Image (cartoon, rainbow, N blue to C red; front, side):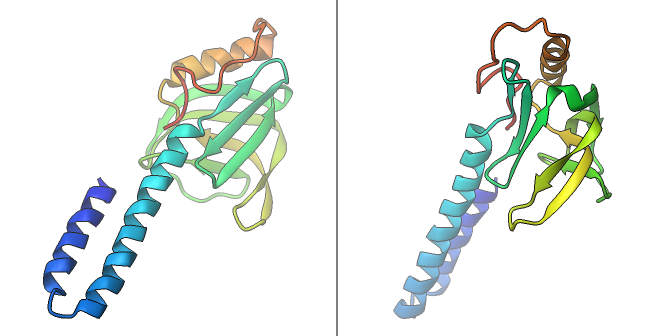
Length: 162
């Protein structure tokens, strides 16, 4: 939706700036760059879903290229489906909302370190994320924690994040 709005804005700016070619070209370059960034961010979210590797004993919770937190399965105290639409910033919690919603809550027995995009480190004990099929993700994590999963789950599954 946002990419579509950016394209409409580009067309409208082209019409408005048609009498000033130098400004028109500069704004057109910026508009095309903006559309590419928006499409790139969406693509990064789609191709980098959460990954459960039962053989390695980790759950990697990711959001695009900005967040990649590896959580050892033995540190997961509980995992549950929990649809939340409001997320206040709280110390010790990491909320990876998609469309302002999270659908899975992971409570950890010991905190893990989350390194932010610019290198800031903080410990988190609760991780909330979105999954396309939260029930399948919860079942897969429970099965892996119980040791019933024999092979790693693939990078793309029915519970991969958008």
